[in-house]
Length: 307
Image (cartoon, rainbow, N blue to C red; front, side):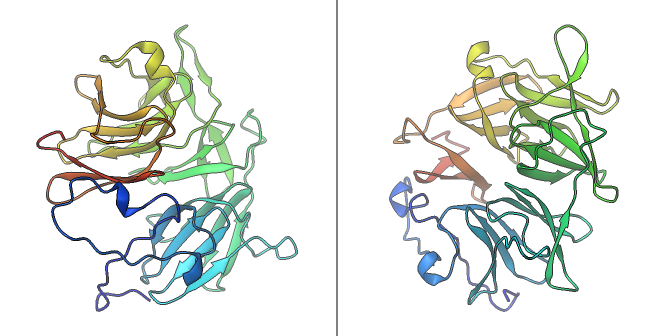
């Protein structure tokens, strides 16, 4: 496994997406170990990466979940004849919660790794009390500071999930008529900021923020871009930088939000591609750079110079 004595730094790239040709403004040589299908990865389309307490990397792909020990991959896929196999081979997110449980959201259900028996427990999700369309294509799973678990779905909106009971409760959104109602649609992005505020996104409403006291989400009215443009952006990922700025990667590009002033600005990066540009991950380093991993390469943005 990967441990403290084995400090090799490696990044898993997709065969098409994360290419060094997309690296902007390189000031020194950077070397990567490329781990792909020839090295045992089940698919080159990587969607999620998580490291467990034992040092293993769990890598979710379009065709299976991979456990990497620093030397080789062990691949887990759905086997219809095996109830302890992965719920579905298309993995959306791998997540380690505060209790040490490893969760896997897939196109066909929710799985939890059984550490003792080395197999998956597929978790039945009860939609009967939620009055929403049953949708087990889970795009995302998050845990907030209170231990509450949220599930983002492909068609059924955002759900609050009780792992012990297996029951989901649909999140509600306050609409312009003053009534809070269940909202549907795809939810792929969710973040809890350092100040404890919870943000998600609803299509086509746009950015929404959770009101803890009233137990529903409210639309965040952002200034800086046309309202129609804001409603049309599908959010894929959030990132909070060290200054409290909120970054969102969307179908329409990259945007920065000032939560205090409720303003948004579009970030245009030099040489960034135009159409079909999709960011899958954002990382902030110690030098003040944001790194964007996308379907068209790896890009770097200087927070100080805004270039």
